[in-house]
Image 1 (tube, protein in one colour):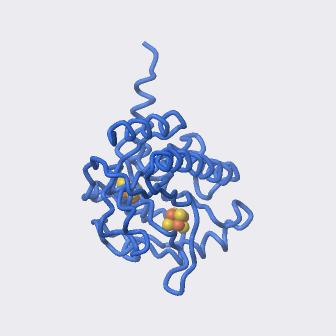
Image 2 (cartoon, helix red, strand yellow):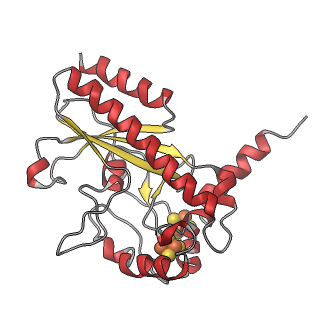
Length: 239
Ligand code: SF4
Ligand code: SF4
């Protein structure tokens, strides 16, 4: 039964445009009020290479539109997954694709970190840019998460960074917000990125482009995404 649901969810998400999907065990990572929803379904939508390539030294208007359009798609996919689960008697909730919930402790966090669900579901590791980095597309993805009490076979979590000695995102961050530390599971976010510095820089410099809420430089410069492009291009050479 659970195997069928898993297949139905994978097919639905893939049909709707998800490039990757995984199932992770979130036990021990959830806030108390959500701890009964300990299965995380993580999806990744691939971003447009053309649009990311065009981010040279600042974000573009098109990137801002793309960012919001992809977020909308993510919310549609995670809502569909939620419906599939609920119709079969499980509890499920989609974590909003892009939403921060201001608390007295943190102004830059959502109700649950998509990145945590993604690493636990085997989708990739967290780069020095504090974004999820996948083998296939580098950091050129955006993430969605469904929390559910569906019992399921979990995917193998990713627990190691593959950034190695690379520091390209760190040296290209105009806000000097990236710390250059290598990710490991459980590392405090502040050891990877100064979220305040990132957000303040975007607000001060990119207000006219995307209302100061997007940048994208640490995504566009990452060689893990560019490497994929080179492979794709090579594969398409005429013979
Ligand atoms: S989004 Fe821009 S400002 Fe923020 S960490 Fe990345 S490169 Fe730096
Ligand atoms: S640019 Fe280099 S250090 Fe930064 S996320 Fe990509 S591989 Fe990791």
